[in-house]
Amino acid sequence: MRIAYVCTDPGIPIFGTKGASIHVQEMLRAFLALGADVTLISPRIEGEPPKDLAGIAQCHLTPVAKGDPETRARASLALNAEVEALLGKSAADLVYERHALYAHAGMEAARALGVPGILEVNAPLIEEQARHRTLVLPDAAERSARRSMAAARTICAVSPAVAEHCRTLGAQSVEVVPNAISPARFPLRPSADGPFTLGFVGSLKPWHDVGTAIEALAILRKGPVPDARMLIVGDGPERACLANQAQRLGVDRAVEFVGAVPHAAIPAFLERMHVGVAPYAASANFYFSPLKLYEYMAAGIAVVASRVGHLPDVVSDGVTGVLVPPGDAPALAAALADLAASPEDRIALGAAARADVMAHRTWDGVAAHVLRLAGLSDRVAA
Image 1 (cartoon, helix red, strand yellow):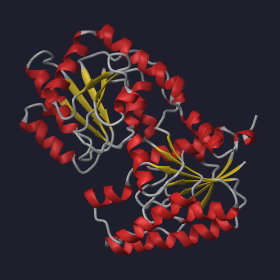
Image 2 (cartoon, helix red, strand yellow):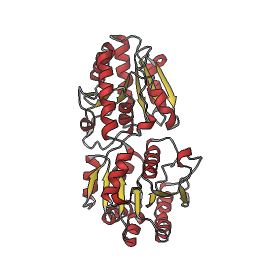
Image 3 (cartoon, helix red, strand yellow):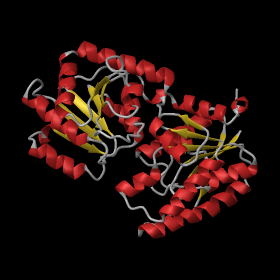
Image 4 (cartoon, one colour):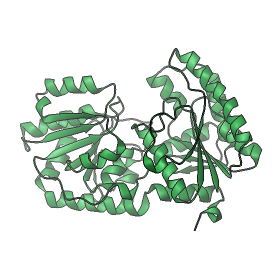
């Protein structure tokens, strides 16, 4: 079985460390594990791939150079012709594409070839670009999105909110397929020792409400858990602001900013955490499927997450984790204090969370589901 994996998003370095990069890598691994021959098509295949991905065939599209937003948008649109030409000469049995702004050729080429096209959608990209960056050529962006979704056999949306967004763009066949974990990357480890440590793993972006977690840490240290610490693994534009906040609240010596690390190093940092936090601000349009949440659970550490979007479908409150109101530092601090005071409850929550994701939320399971959606289950290698 031959799979063409298309990712034309110039913001995703395929072999990088950001969450989107890890998502791509894990899907590539999962397809390989099912016996597929995979060809990767992208403008950002740079650096050394992990050893287990070194054998994947690579088709390098023209890189989208840094510059003004309109120049980059037009360069992204131009990639459609390259993708169409490459796929037109391929013998792919399946085209699997990570949805990108201005992209439509992958799904249309699959339809022209008469093979299934599966479109993975991770966010409402047009709205996200307009809110957090600079959206140019909005009509072209919407046309491409509608074309891609109309041509896809099935769309895999990472959350119910993303699925609903796809339907507003005319998508007919949409499945909710959340993020997942690779069990082999998270062997069972002993519980962390030392001072009570809450941890955050992820990019330091505005929508990751890490500031609320730092505020909760300050509450803990002034009251029930005076030696509490926080470990922040990741980097991003909010780092300086968060460091200033920690200093202002008098907890800067209790907060360790690790920076970005290779994904393979994440489990070692999770071992140092007693609780993993996934804080988010209140939002009527929350659409994320946080990779960090599944990885905390896989590591067997207790999870405290905001009760927002579909996160209550991921974390069963009081069973596989604890849910708190979004943006509420006192509530987060209270939940953390309870877990600090009760190691038995904390360990039980972590064990239940680990059992849940190991049974139901693996990348191999996601890839197998994709093949079922594509009508290719019978092509899986024995």
